Amino acid sequence: MAIFNQPNSAKKDAAPSFAPEPVAAPARDPQPAVADFNPTQTAPPRRPATSEVKESLIAANLTIEGKIEGTGHVRIAGRFKGDVNVQGDLTIEKGAKLNGGVRAEKVVVSGDLEGNIDSASRVELLDTAVMNGDLKAGSLTVAAGSKIRGHIECGWEKDANQKVNGNGKSEAKADKADLELAS
Image (cartoon, rainbow, N blue to C red; front, side, top):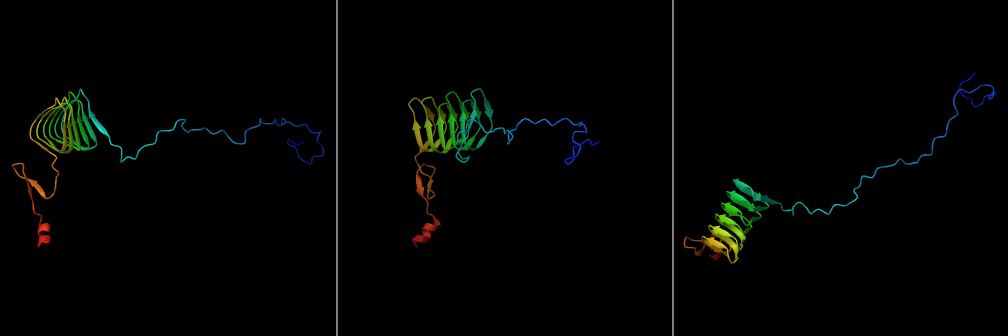
């Protein structure tokens, strides 16, 4: 007696089969289901990292003492004691106070500044600004109502052949290369 079916068996009906008849499997899709992990919304296009300029904020309820240096914009809404040297813009909000020197590309003052602004390309003093200190800038905008006390040098281009003497007058400085060309 054979337990399995032999294809060329002469006695098919004589031997009972102990194996159950195979049941047809339910029909399946030829491809398995694949989950879609693509986002339904597209993100806005990002600008290159070189054009993104970050702004740092000193909040209205903070008082900080130290030094700020680096690139990017700085906005002071609280109190800061120390020098600010940034390759970017500095904004001093209304009600804010800065005690220290400033070097920045553009400076906008709405609050109190007690210190010097040195080598800014543009300075704006808004109507609530109070400034105690010297100012050197390429251009200066002063709104009615602002207060300023100090020495102001504005509009003078920095030229390698110019130097300012102690009286505030510019003197031409002869360069060695210019002297050799003249002879």
